[in-house]
Image 1 (cartoon, protein in one colour):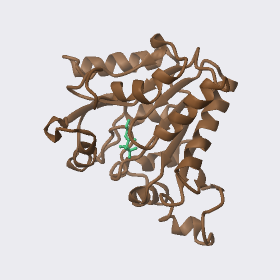
Image 2: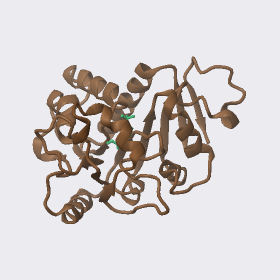
Image 3: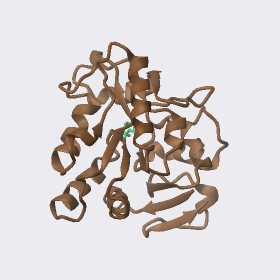
Image 4: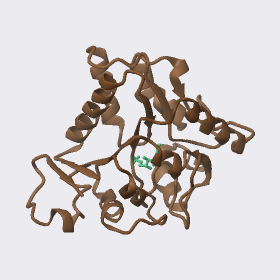
Length: 259
Ligand code: F6R
């Protein structure tokens, strides 16, 4: 696993956007897996800026989002559908037909998961998957569990996640109890993965994911088994990495390590 330690959120976001740009230059038909949440917003802003300057072209890029709340649709401001148009899709030259999102309003959640898996398969899988990480180590909405879920599936959100994510809901009672999420198996089939983390609150999850054993109780730890996974972390998110970075006194410079 590659680790890139950046000094702050801005640098993390720029570094991530530059890597996405490089992938699109190499493969203009890139199949890009995307995450929502606070973490990737800076990267999305940077991608919009680059797109407006003609530095990156999304004409033939295909996207698949990781997850969606059950019961929320495109018009709900808290839905991930709404989030993606607000924070990325409306600002870049991507084609609507190339955007893939899970339908949170489906009457048949299991059927919707199968439809999505099939769409990913038809696109020949994800080339580059962008991930955030939850305080509990979740990736997508793959919550800590006794097994690694494989394909796209219906999820019961953990109390921990519901409490943290309810900050995005004006009316906390609207916070869903369930979601649809791409599974760990599907994420791990991506040819390349980039995970971003920027806050101190993520430091413990990052340490467990990188230095701890691979176990479904820390879903992100599975990334240790991926042959092309990169974590771009701020020094705050990396502060628990004692064993690896013991000798580095500070992270003010960009550090790059293979672990
Ligand atoms: C959202 C997703 C989640 C988030 C994670 C971190 O699509 O996949 O796993 O990446 O909950 O969220 P933030 O970035 O808000 O801390």
